[in-house]
Image (tube, rainbow, N blue to C red; front, top):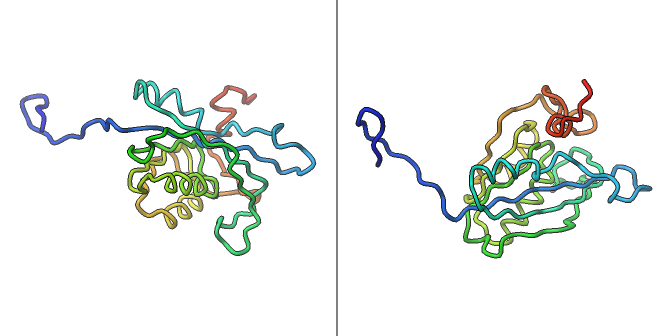
Amino acid sequence: MGSAYAGSMYTGVDFCKRLCGVSVIRRWNDDPSTSFEVIFNFNNGESMENALRACCKGIKIGKILIHREGDNGYSLFHSNALLFLRLIYEKLPTDISDRHLLLLDPILGTGNSAIRAITLIIKKGVPESNIIFLNLIYAPKGVHEVCKRFPRLKIVTSEIELGLNEEFLVILGMGEFGDWYFGTDDE
């Protein structure tokens, strides 16, 4: 209980002392003749880290790097899925299972990369109910896939877009997030 303006009482929340962030970083390659190190996706959780650090000074932030080759729009667990997702790198706080976790990924499209990252985090001992998935934009298909697989997960977003295009990329009303964030959009 706390006291507010004009002496009225309120029941509030307290800052969680055992909090950490984890950035999801995706690399993809739709051209098998090209090395995947050449192609990098700027739509990753690292773009959200500065804002998290500004709110939560000294917060521990981990990384999950996922290599993705193509996408066919199927669920990662669908029998016809041809999607190739491979965990390349993970660096997570050693006490992650004792913490509440903010999963950072600005765009949720098909949900496959998010499902891969969340599965890894749960295998590390973090209860599903302790994960808050933060993103800026999502497509309905992706959120349905993630919520179907992880019903106790919380998702916080700022914008719901129309859906996915024929290449299974989010149809953005606000423009390409990477260009918008890094100021590289020429329009």
